Length: 231
Image 1 (cartoon, rainbow, N blue to C red):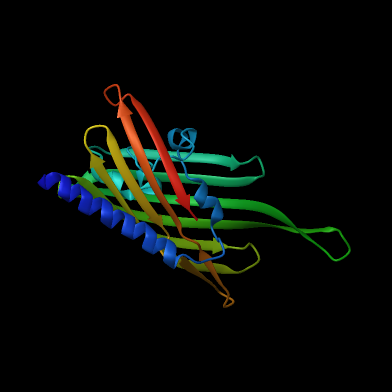
Image 2: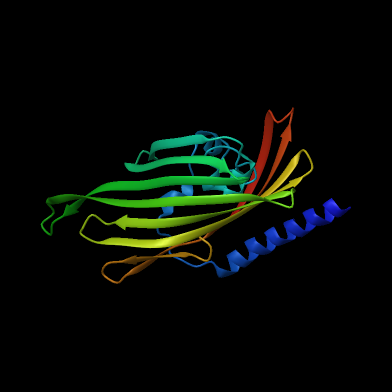
């Protein structure tokens, strides 16, 4: 009974976290390429990974999952989004230390373009780039849940001599409901992350909030998962 009450308490806190984040959400969608996620396994599952998050990409999908890892892992990806010349890359490492899950990653998106002069002729080429350095930390909560957080340092360069920087924060939670079921919630860019440009303009990385359920069968060899996103 005590364990059940603990689970109900943690689940209730998770729902409050997501609903509060949705209420605070605002922004215009800078760094939108980063919302696609990374990792072949997670993407092959349609991105329904917030309640799974059990590999080296956990920091991206739900930092709470780092608390469940027991070794050191590396992850990497480089792809052309939708075949449109938008490069999306990621390199990261996760490990454990003193009962904590720790992660460090770098994510980059870039697109090449052309300046067009008034007469219609092509001008000089420029490249728009967006980078983020992500630090992650996770721990167990009352032996029935895992909680984690990301701190992100955003950097952007419009290729025309202006740069921008800013910080972002993610919060994640995973709750085990017995041996088969896991609930996960993740609030990315909580309340929106402000990015300030050299010229005084400001962009906002709008928040993305996800709740999910995962079910494992056949001695954890089969996983069924579903997610709901609030963007």
